[in-house]
View 1: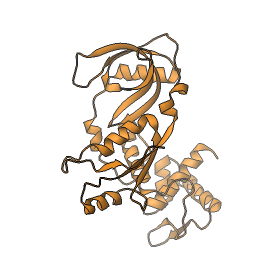
View 2: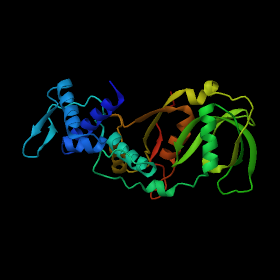
View 3: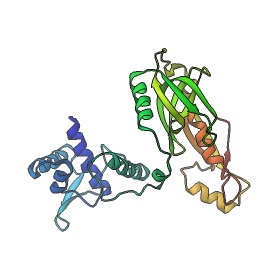
Length: 272
């Protein structure tokens, strides 16, 4: 299947599952294709997956049948909302196909630190070309005088705590670390040998973190906390992640709540 055909099918299923119906005109506008071509795409989908949709003459559009089961998209509400948020973020960068009737107002985007164009471009170039970087790095956000110069081998981009990091091998400390992009004060391509993440065990190893509501909290608050997550019947929430990312997850779950002055979650069992 060609890429454009799959994208049209994904659009069709998104409109059937989450929208109020599908029309050839809407499909045509989304992909800048003629109405006959759009109608052909709808007919092809119907032939590939019979009994997935039907035409509602009162609404004058195609709607999902009671037995509709998506083939190309995931019927998960959180993933769908993340997708909407992603579409909104992409829209800040370029014109994108509008698959939704909604825009997500992303407050967290307004709280992020600014980034230097030249530095980010150098980091991206080093990631793509597998090259080392000579950087000047500010170790603490508010301690502007505490700076170090070092060689790093960038390996992976990470988004955590509402900011971007680059997971890299630090040639100064001789270990893999996360470097916050907003703390890199300057960067230029270096010509030392680049170190891949093959031996970054914390990145390559997967662990399961287990949390339960803090037993020091009232029972009604513990139950309310559990209802917000897909926890097991025993009241334990399991999260699988890279070991290198466990720090951020633990910090998010176990930092004391401002109103209660206690963390909402505590460790349930040892990591696996």
